[in-house]
Image (cartoon, rainbow, N blue to C red):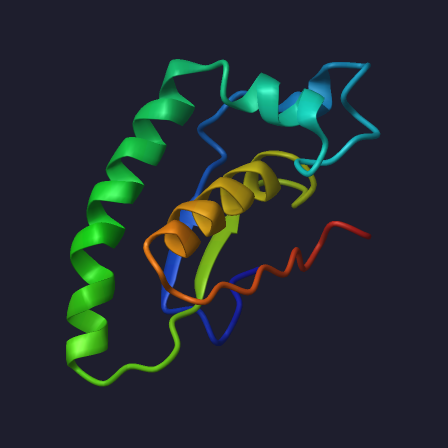
Length: 110
């Protein structure tokens, strides 16, 4: 379900699901093999391009308004593969912009 404290929510269920690949099923989006799978699909790269453009515009605007924290959430079916890989990449991007980043994978252990 949706986190109650979410400021921005991105549903990534449109991406191919690593769960259906036997060798990836027990791994998570923190594992390189899953990341490679997720980002081998053009839609993942296009999504990240759109995300990065939006966040590059939005984060300074939120900061100008005095917002001291922003919760971005990424969701998929199980919360183990796609959303994790995307959140990790998104966190890296935001961190490289100079913002402090904290990543929590809510459903990775379930």
